[in-house]
Length: 270
Ligand SMILES: Nc1nc2c(ncn2[C@@H]2O[C@H](COP(=O)(O)OP(=O)(O)O)[C@@H](O)[C@H]2O)c(=O)[nH]1
Ligand SMILES: [Mg+2]
Image (cartoon, rainbow, N blue to C red; front, top):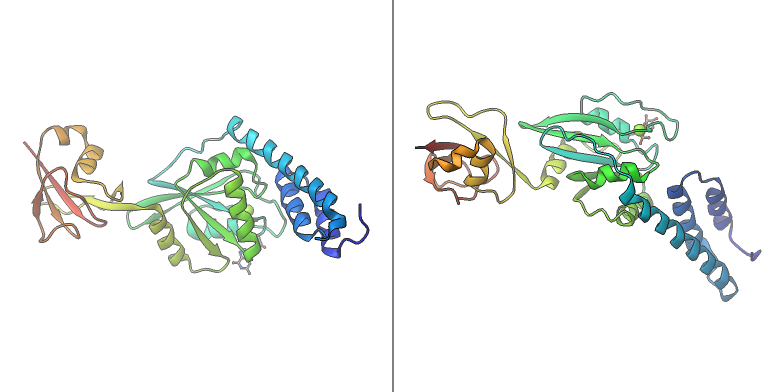
C-alpha cells in the first residue's frame, strides 16, 4: 500500500472497514477510488480497488433476482421513498400520509418498509419508505412500484442514489426532493410523475362520482368502460363527455375516443 495517500482516502478506507452491509462497502469503495492518488505509482492500488468493487456489485446483482418482497398495492399507485439514513424519509412519509413511522436521530431506525397512503383529488396513492440499508429484498419493492421519490441532502447523495438505482437496474420514473420542500408541491410532482389521468363516472341525471377512475395517460373510452364493468364494452352505445377532451359539455363519442385528465364520462348501453 503506498504511503502517500490523502487524508480523504484514509477516511474513505475507514468507512469501508467499518461498513456492515455490502451496499455500504460499495459506497465506501467508490469513494476510495475517487480519492485514490492518480499518479502511476498507485496504478496497482486503483486496479485492486476496482476489482473489489466489481466483485461486490456482481454479488449484489446476483442477489436481486433470488429474493423479493411484495408489498400489496393499496390504492391507485405505489410510490417508494428512497434516501440515505437520516435524510428525512420517515419525516416525509408522516407529512405526506396517515403513517406514523418512528422518526429518530439514530441512523438506520427504519428496518422494514413503512407504509402510508394519501388522497390526491380522489386518487389514493400508497407511499412506502425503503430502509436505507438498500437490501435487495427491499429494492425489489422499488422494482415493483410505480415511481420513486429520491430524498437527498447533497448533490453527492443524489448521485449515489441514482447509482444505486442503476446497480439494481431499476428504470422507474422518479422525482427529486430535498428536506423541507413544500408538501403540496411534492404531492403534485408525485401525481405528475405517475403519468396517470383521473376520469369521473356519472349516471344520467346524476352528479359525477367523487372517487376517480385512474387510468394511464392515453387511455380511451373503452379502457374506462372495461374498468367499470366488462359488459359496458359489450353493450356500449355511446359515451357523453364533459371536460378537456370534449368540444362542448356532453358531446358524444365512441369507444376509441382518447380521454384527458379530469374528464367526466357517462356511458350509455343498449
Ligand atoms: N431540519 C430538518 N430536520 C429534519 C427534516 N427531516 C428530518 N429531519 C430530522 O432528521 C432526523 C432523521 O429523520 P428521519 O425522518 O427519521 O430520517 P430517515 O432516517 O431518513 O427516516 C430526525 O432527527 C429528524 O427530526 C427536515 O426537513 N428538516
Ligand atoms: Mg426512517
